[in-house]
Length: 125
Image (cartoon, rainbow, N blue to C red):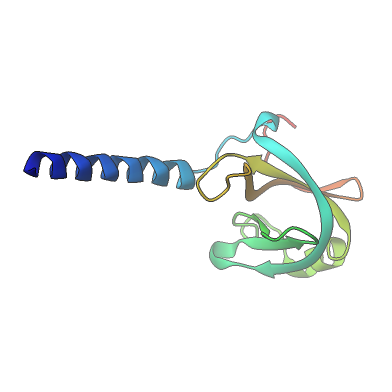
């Protein structure tokens, strides 16, 4: 019985570590194969923790974000003037995690409005 308990506990711990790594692994070296296009009307832009910038799109429940956007030279005032209440094209990370089972990770890799690229971290574009 003791052997079963330890085997079961270790197995659960390993499964937890694997799921944690899948969910929170860093997003680096993004290519065009790693993203999916999302189009919508921006209804709200607001700051988040760690200098992130969040974008809320109409008819999509979960907000999208640019990781450390304020450190990358993006400012809320100029984004409000440029992007708010306009249709945008977001290129979001395409990755399955336990939190994003539809493979639409909310990390923005490219932001385009009216044909102008506002933000781009995709390496092959």
